[in-house]
Image 1: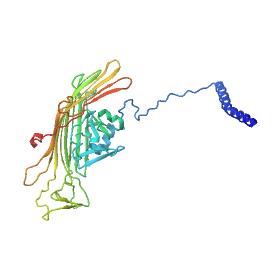
Image 2 (image 1 turned 30 degrees about the vertical axis):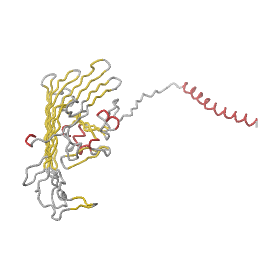
Image 3 (image 1 turned 90 degrees about the vertical axis):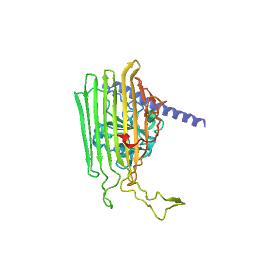
Image 4 (image 1 turned 120 degrees about the vertical axis):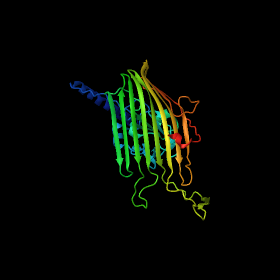
Length: 396
């Protein structure tokens, strides 16, 4: 027994010392080599875009991609992005759905400031953002959405535009013109923008778009078109910025008017009542006619934006950014009958967002970034006021 214990101990010692001897021989051989190649440093980032910001977008559609794939509505434009689908309701309303979540669980921003409309309340309400006038659309998911409030658990869509210039144009006048058409709905859409310098520091921006589409054409049905799928939209904005060496400050006024149908509307069972698992309908049926006019939405949105940036204000801070907006939004859903006046129902939202004691109509964002890539954000959560809609002529 004693002899076996000594032999085992010796074997273990040899096994442990053998790799050490091999490493020593390798080190001696490498020392004799004259040519030694050093590898360059490789930086590995966990963020796909290599940014130090915690709000790095998950998916980005730049200007070139938008030119090729831009659609009528925001939801249709983003539906081919990974994890994003479209909640479509006819030709005028479509909102993005991220990982199966939509409505108020998906936030829609305009350059970091909340878009005020009624699109999160119902799928038949349009998003007041025109993809034709966007320069970039970002889709954020995960923890980065907390920078814009706690309600967007599905994600955030941030639409960046050029209504407020942030830098001087390279030429005295710069602009763009875009056009799109299809035969399914006899649609035609156009957009144009112009940027020019009035002085060395004062820059103006004017842009607008128009879309006109009829009802969808279909085959194999009694009717050749789908009633209520038409859509009309007009957008326009004018903005100005004072641009200096350390930043800029600008304001813009924008106006949007939409008129689109609501397909699939029917009064066939409105006089029926529930009777267990079935419907109990009057024997006389639906005894009045609503005509051939389908319900439609008539909305108007007026918005004033203020944006600014101050770079290198003092030591330790690289930039201070400000976003603010005031929105006056009116929305009417109208159903016309042959023998009755239009019966609108809707809501109005109005207020200044940087005073939380009044009716707030957006989100304010302050951001301070330091060389260590830290940031501080303040978001004013919106509160909406519903009121009895004004007569239709007030929308003009």
